[in-house]
Length: 450
Ligand code: 9MR
Image (cartoon, rainbow, N blue to C red; front, top):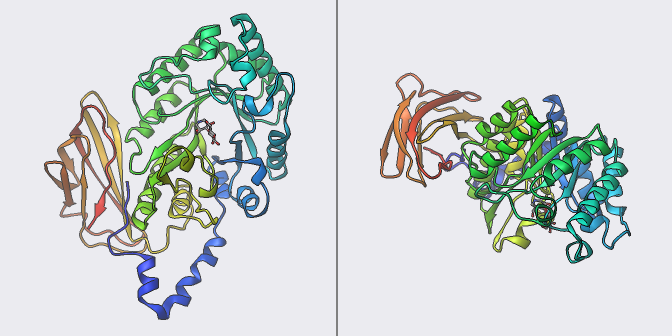
């Protein structure tokens, strides 16, 4: 986690010092010329994607989608209820439109999604079909859709959200009819329909190491052992402000070590409205933590955001009082989160006026213990001494630290520089580490520098 240095805010400068307003107001123009995210991502061999709505692909929405992203996911257009609203009557208009748009702009497409318990057409779910009929319907659906886009959809979320939170299999129309091996059957069928497409299982709340992600891990391992085609896992990453799991990178790495790719497929980070400067700064830190975790693991192919603008996000409709979850505001102005994505991809821009920021990460975690680290990066400020503080939300306790002196009182932790690392130059960074204990959960706290 990072947070802005207290007292360092562009808004304060703008309102407090009217005479330099013109100079500071020139900054957005400079930002418009920043290297687009897709160029930064391409230089790192990564995907930076967004979900899109076909009906909005014109004007500024289309310009930003084309300029900034090198992958697109149809947010709804490829779901069964969208493509076959009544039996045998297909509507490919929006899906075709998005695939055409992507090709016109040199973008790849993530197909979403073939087998799901949700957003199925009524004729299918209420049709009273026998298990044998449902198997045929599902296999035909996979054949029809995957074949239609053969060679044009690079990766498919073949199976979406197959697990419950406790790691058991979700009971769905498909598990009821075909048994739990519907997953293997669907993957095998998709491979036959387009041997060139990468095949994924996609789920939410599987970003950190937990019961659900471990179930997904065990499934992927067993599919690999059986020779069932599986190329990757999608970690959706619908996250809440300040709650990026500390084990994100460790979790990505364990899937990579199984020999599959990992994609972050639906990233958004919601906050309780109204958005404030402090919340947007925290959100930028959270986006940065997710991006950094992906960039750190070779087999993490990239990150897709679930809508790039707050005007095209599912959050306000589903979580009352929450929103502002994407990297652009409703008027297409890039938020601090946008700059955090750019910075993680090697871009040079940071949110204007950011001084020094701290990033907290769980490096490793085991039964009851963990190793953590905090990195302090200074962008346009230097430090001669530092103090990082945070409050643990789940009973964690620090037992040992290095490259800093850490004390804990209740839940409150204070770490100050060692004698040899208090100086951090502009553009420089310093890292310190610690061991601790945890139980239940180990969420990442918000670190404040002072
Ligand atoms: O973004 C989608 C939204 O427009 C739909 O109303 C919603 C219905 O469930 O689905 C949203 O996308 C979901 C995605 O397909 C699968 N993972 C969760 C996403 C958010 O609900």
